[in-house]
Image (cartoon, rainbow over all chains, first blue to last red; front, side, top):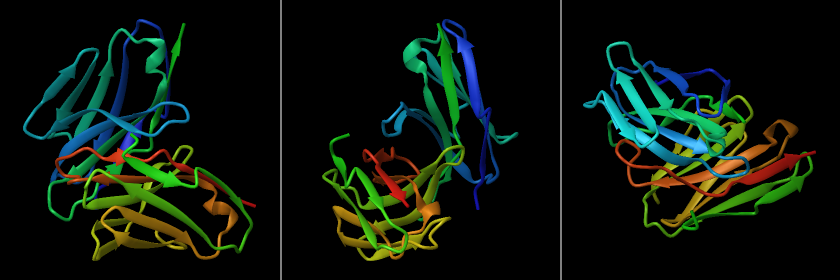
Length: 113
Length: 113
């Protein structure tokens, strides 16, 4: 089955700097890679996703890159702001009608003023 | 997301007690999930259901059972609660995890004394 590893577990960056969170997956059949953000005391919510036929996707200050050969994908946040402080989860799922999503262990991102 | 609700939001119980957590959704999604969140361990899948007649075990189903009473309702039961089941529990729904967003409920914080 799929296994997703996420690094680092905690990350602290200066406001305005960039943050990068990396994930690796084990199942080469995986083809959908979402990222969820969980603010303190809130539920996880999707912030961006990428599919295996795309190498990079951007949405304003956030971007996700995918390297299928190496089986890793990354979340990039530029010009970080205080509201970016949260726990971020990567996930992967192989496409099939019986598939289920597998989450990484999460990264706690803190933005220093 | 007000379309996925969970009751209760907080619960304190004693070892050996039976407890039920309930999830309701108005999104019309067939797929429903129960996750457990522990610090540093991310979101781990307990059970999932692709329709009313379909129930599947996740990676940590021992000590838990579920009931899918209708398309909109999915309940999680702890038959005899133990302290290491203290955690934050999330219900989620999706149309298809291979191509679609998972929508999480607000979570239930369960403490077993």
